[in-house]
Length: 111
Image (cartoon, rainbow, N blue to C red; front, side):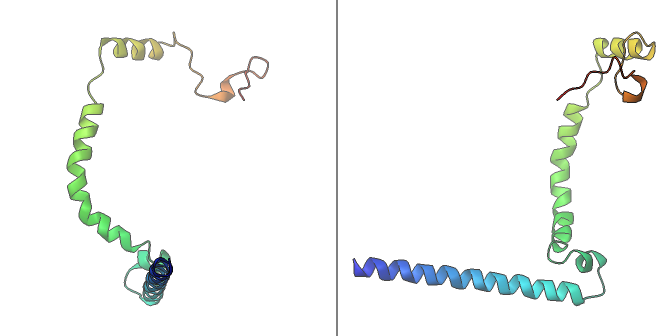
């Protein structure tokens, strides 16, 4: 049982050491980002601002998938959709998009 406690203790110390190294690394990035004068994003948003450049590089890779997804979602409007748009334009369908148009007496209060 003594060897198990030593192994667990070793891994606990190793974990604390790794977390300490990670915190020191982030602190170093923070100081470097705050003191540099070349990039405004890194100066205003230290450490997090570094991800912008990483995501710019990945943007072209993901853009192909998002453009296909958007093209699938934005198909043409069918016959029923055009009918609804026409009736809405002719004001046969009452829209509640503007709450100021409704009278106070007839307004429903949703909770």
